[in-house]
Length: 166
Image 1 (cartoon, rainbow, N blue to C red):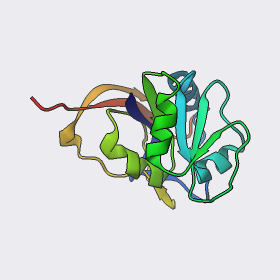
Image 2 (image 1 turned 60 degrees about the horizontal axis):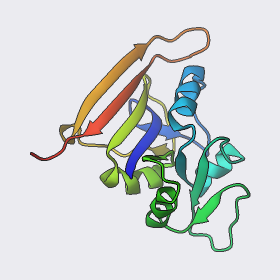
Image 3 (image 1 turned 90 degrees about the vertical axis):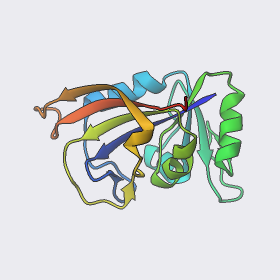
């Protein structure tokens, strides 16, 4: 099974503050939904808490160290490895890691693809997407969009694929 990361990050890699996103980008919301629909999504407990409920149309897998923590409508596991095994049980070709910062950092070395919405601003936050070495990745696609009445910031949809040896 392939592992992909899906993230919206500012130019300084900020992804949130106080367990909330720092922007409203309706096109990114649509992109996220279309990309992950029907697939397993793996997230940390704080990300699940910020969503407030399982994401419809997807197998929701939540990683937490809290024993006996439950999430109705989601499968709860203790480690990324358990989450990947649960995702593999769905027979999907790809599983999507959707946050937060700690889970992205754990999953980055295992990922084959990054779906990155680069938000063209610098903001203060307390959650970050990890730095990744662009020498180890190919930029497969990049679509730029300006700020407009519905999008306070310009942004780019980028898809990165991990380079393979040989």
